[in-house]
Image (cartoon, rainbow over all chains, first blue to last red; front, side, top):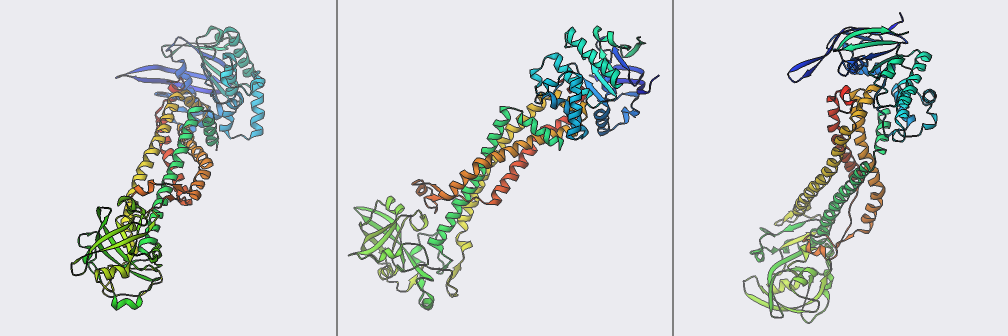
Length: 230
Length: 385
């Protein structure tokens, strides 16, 4: 077993719904190691995105412990959580979430600016990332000038540029056609192999599932099945 | 530093709405400076004109003299024989006042008849014109008086007065000069003649209502009540304060409108850019950091508005301060001693205080909507909710 980057024990997450509470996650025990390429699969409302949010330190569990790179998510201050996200976690979203006023280069540069890297180092890392996603020629384009596939590749570059330990991808292919989905997934698989980055997907896209080497099936906030695929 | 850079980039890329706000703010900024400068110019000029033409360096009033009591004005005079040695045309000028009725072309009107030494140089009035020879008594009036009483240069008028014994007398006088300035307090409802002529007419030899002194005058005069410039200019200062308060309210309204536009833009930006806020948080910013980003974006409105205002405002304001603003005949109707050309006064302090006030107000209105970012749930805003 590889080194554990994510470790959850008895993770419960409840959300207030009117006068009642809705239990989105109900006792999730999960260990994810370095270099894994795994996915949370299940129908809508099964808790996939909630797990990504908590692992990504954007939310905290209602009960149980969640450790990400040894940090207890439940006890992190806002500043510590932000630092953890900034340094070690990359996000890829279904709707790309690129900042519209920035160019491709600037969008990819943003995490590095937050890390305080100098210009030369940033430039080198950005160009590497753009090469990984084959978008060097689009470096000065704005998101509005890109296709969906290109936008998602920029999002991948932005997530990967700082070489994070973990990349969390929430339905990354949901807005893409088959060809673009294939490209994106191949790209992520290559990066996973090359950089040993851990990828955790939330998806119900069959195309993504074909690439997964570990599939964690969720039903009603519980792990129904956790299978490794050879 | 990063926040500052990002905020600038966001603002520059924000498009026409942002630039419209910046333009409006720059106009408000320049208008505030202009209005305050104008007020300073108008009242500065008013104080100066009133001082040099009427009060000089102060006045010694006869006992019980009350300029606000026109009914009994003829009774307010006293002898200056005891202090006559101190008086000279360039240092202390006695003035005698009495009410008069003017008869001209079958019309009659009332006025104040003022006797003054024609050779005096204590006040900046063209009193030497009273030395112009005439077959009648030489008198002069201001252009306001000429207009309101329908009089003009060369007119022969009959002046009716009561002497010290209450006996009515009448003399013919010729208007030998019409003063062209806009100093109301030595013009409206007034006729000026030589002090000697008036004293003879009223049988009040060596009597005056008050004595106006120059800076060089340093004597004490018993029996005369000294009124310094603070006292004499108190009404103007009060008026200045009231007008400046009015102008300040106008400035506040203008600034509030500009601030509201920016507040509205910021509120809308936070609403529209929720997904961006969520993304920035996901990338490693804290909510506090994002809040600061939006506040600085707002502050840039102020900075760019001020810079833009300074770029076109400095030349414009400089020209107005050098060339002045000609109120023309308007000035006559203002009822203030201000002359027809007003030179606004723009000081460094005025620029500095206006800049700080605008920057502070805009920063506050940018911060207020940005506060709501703390209440946003990052997982929700990531979806743009």
